[in-house]
Length: 145
Image (cartoon, rainbow, N blue to C red; front, side, top):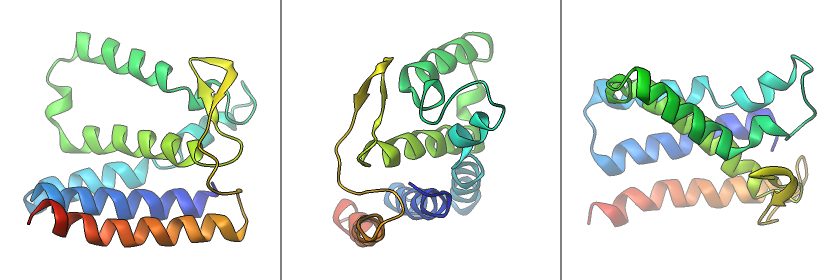
């Protein structure tokens, strides 16, 4: 998924989530800003040149371990909506890439997990974003029926 697509995905899905959960304005804003701020985090780490594209920076197990360690030292940190939104942004990034033909690492870098619905940078990615937009608009209405 291209960077602009990650930004749009995080903006649409995090906003839809806050509407669905009927969060107050302050919490909604913190969650959406957190998600949008970290929407390209897994790709940005790769610019350090420690790894190739979609290697350990896209490994969901790594983030699960990181969350567990952080929670051990700072147990109240996950009550902050910006922090929750930031984690949500990283998760949405990885999930977005999981739906591409390239996929993402599953536990080990040798095994890829993918549900190939689009090719990065092609019309199929735009179509995927349009479907996501429709789902982001409809879901709050279905959930809050």
